[in-house]
Image (cartoon, rainbow, N blue to C red):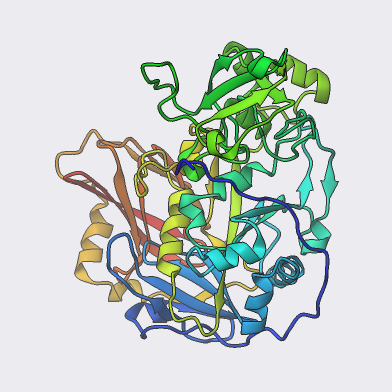
Length: 525
């Protein structure tokens, strides 16, 4: 089997229920106390602990703040607004989470507990096991990832509107709960694939073997997307084996051919293609509301769906299959079949909030929180993020048409996290602070560079307008003691930032852009 052909089995496998065990009632404490720990206090007044500290390649310091009911808020040194929720689970609960019978009721129970702590602000909830890929777990569950579609309010997708949010504890916001039973799935996939299932693929019948409809994936078609299908096709033999109307084809994701005309890299997936190494296709972007029907018309879009199919596993790995029927759809054919997408690409949602819940066994010998933090931030990263070469994050996979937000969990907590209630008095600020506060000047040699911050003073949220002088720049916000409260790398010229959860007072925003350093004051009311 070609290494890039990955088949993800996606289907709900359970209906049985069980009594939930007692949730753990203590934080997962790994590592040592750290100087940062005084900067955050839980509602119970407990100090957070730096739960994982590694400075190896691609790893960052991770800070854990216990919230109660077994949950901890996880932040990293670059952004202390909270990126992950961690839940400690008992051995019994872990066994249920990796059982094809019991994982669904257990996830619903956990989600209802999550909504006791957070507001209904999230479009997606990712459940990630704090473990690497494991063949035994995959064998027990039967999938590498699973989208449990919770609600749909979009017309024209080939599936009706529905709302099962109450079962999950949401009050109408949650679109999907996605289960990733190994942490590698965030970067390697199938995270993008599972997100796609929130919108497709139900817009027309698709097929695998024979003429039975193949629900939820593109099957043998030229869809060439996250949910399967090929891009290139050649006819090998018409009336194959002497059977009239039966054609032997070879399909591929890449165009390179051998001297005899066969594809050098033949093969494709009927469920998925190359995991997060594949971008969303035109028809997938249309279903997601990120491309218009006019975009597809201008691209001469045509979806070819094959049925009456046969193939041998040995040769299908190289893209060979037999088919007796091909049905083609233009975008107008699909609209005639399902109606227009409402809302259309002009009014559709483009930005989605993701809550990532990391499920950690209490007796875990290894903790992968740093890798999870790295990968979820990459998945929500910008177009120029090269943390994982040859893979695509959400922005890259959507051609910068969509984005996801994975941090700022503090602003969604029902019980606010209390940071130090009173900053040091202005007269106690160090000399460097007084000098910068008085001048508020840009760095030497950058008089022509414009930096706008508005509103300033701010109640929390504010915009930063800045024209980058290089490919990317670093933003650091420090409090009156010089302690960083936010650090971010960006290439955008307009960013929304915030000081939510921080006390009122004076903050400094520093932009490092190549050799240029610019510092501006921000007043938080």
